[in-house]
Length: 255
Length: 242
Image (cartoon, rainbow over all chains, first blue to last red; front, side, top):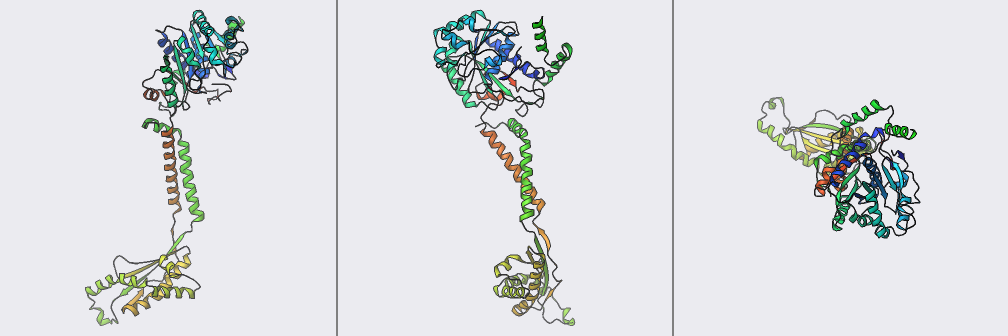
């Protein structure tokens, strides 16, 4: 299970029960939207930078893998890659070298960065990321990943900045847009949604991140507070520390 | 621009309640402090004179005072006021004040002097308001000395009696508490108005309901709360997080 990293916190910390439940809710809703889709590839993007896209796609891939499905997470943001830092893997061998013909796909895959989860980092930053994503080799790579894995999550740059995500959308089941509370502008988000529609892309939905429920029109206690008791129950009932999943993982690793 | 949503607006005001309290307190402190330190207090003295229209009354004549005479005295008070405000009279008041080393121009004397009839009677009231209680009394004394002589000469008045000599001025204001409350009210209105303007100009995403309304019922897969650390404070955005 991913732990705290320097590039953002992956959610599995006992004191963030509400965050964990939020991701599970998003997972469930996403599974509903993917039920009739032809593809098992999900592109995650946003309208503008700093929306929390990478954190969301990493955690979403983790919770999806927790269902027992085989999941691969692809860092297709070859302009500003960060997922290699989240999972503490080398960034040198990755998608850019695969698309440049310098590596095979199997050489680039980082196996088991989390339970049932593999990662393909972005690799070295190339001079032509948009062109690389549009190559035949990328289509074949996606096709191969789609066959091997139950779900493919692709992290892409913001659509409002570059159109890399739109290049991948034809092969994907759809695009998940990330909007950040009190940061993402409605006009920018509307423009991004229009851009997806104009490119005949399928918009799977929007996820709002960094939600502070106090003062945002919610009740004082927030919609998840009544469930936080379950988090404490699990903590005390099964394990003695907050990082109970982390401890369980470590115990599994040690045999 | 954001649509007016009372629930969100109220939530926005509550979220920034500390700023509202701060500006309210600041407004009260600033205006109250300014009034206390920079605005001088006003002191008011008053002298009242009874102006009788009857001349040389003797004890035998006093019984024959008629109601018409009383009415005449009451209605003439306004004429007395006009006479007193004449330059000729004001000059005399100014000269009287110079004897006590007070130098006043006519315009200033008219400004600080307030002449009126007391409850529509034949009583003439002169109130003087200055920033010095002794000065207020001095001007009242000058008026009390000059006016009777002038009225007797000019209007052939029976008698002008000063009811009681003026006392040193009593403080009339400004009310520091009142100014502080006014300042607090101004601070409150400005802060609420500012928050309202910020709210209306804020075009960013707030919650799922508003997002669906603004974007034609778009599918919202979920919301991720702010990630908190062990101290239940928001985690700083780590380097590299997109």
